[in-house]
Length: 179
Ligand code: HQG
Image (cartoon, rainbow, N blue to C red; front, side, top):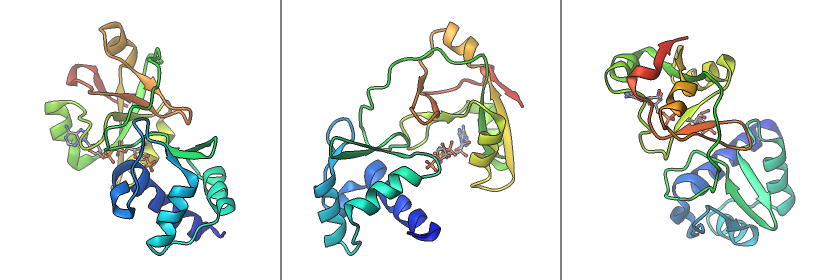
């Protein structure tokens, strides 16, 4: 597959495995998994023919390792709006993490803190370059520092996905600073 085809299929998979499985007539189990043959049949029924080899290629070559393929099943590693339990253990965060956003959200973020919106968690990065990339999806990026160590010491839970995205439910204003 060429790069364009890979990105297109990755976006389609993100949509069905994180947000809207019902649009192709599948359901995910409580941990977000679906059997590969069921997924491929459903994609084919809805006009997207994908072979098991192509699916493996998208999972393997995905720039952010967004999907996990194990024992004939697949799931998204993070980013769900659906209620799934990823089973990620609570993990001690580094002293600071970063959040990439855009200027137009800053007033609201400084008033209310970082909110998870439709997703299960607020997404944080361990380095500023990744945070900048996340922010730049929406415009000129602005990077905020999150005092994760202090938050954890004050009782907040953090999780990290196996592709290195840090997750927490909410970041109060008191733990935010400019990067
Ligand atoms: C902003 C991508 C106003 C927040 C990325 C962000 C990430 C507020 C937007 C992952 C706010 C939510 C997640 C507040 C937060 N007032 N705006 N109080 N609190 N926001 O897409 O972090 O490619 O849900 O700054 O790489 O941008 O999908 O979150 O701009 O890892 O794998 O509200 O999605 O990964 O946007 O991105 P999102 P995000 P994938």
